[in-house]
Image (cartoon, rainbow, N blue to C red; front, top):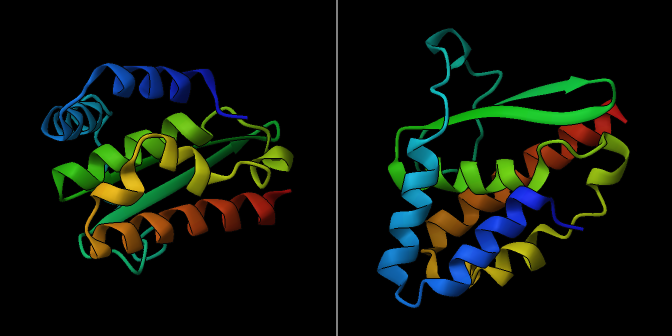
Length: 136
């Protein structure tokens, strides 16, 4: 059920044997994201449960989910980019069917993130799912 953009990330990860290279790739994904306007870095959009500062701004148009995001940590910004690839463009009614844990597990992220980063990633997924559920 993963999007084409997420499948591209998964394919790239298959070719990167070293975890340092995979981390660099995640960071590069984050660097490629458009920066979030400072005016959107408000408590409304801040994700609690993350060790770093994280903001997710949902954008739902015509029943299709999208979001913008930002973090003050490079690796977390990259994780936001990975989540964007997983969820952007998905109809809100179908978003709950995406098994984020399994999809991210395909990348091996579950085994290679610190407990704090894993908790933050889980908090971001929960925020995305709750936002889509409220919109559906």
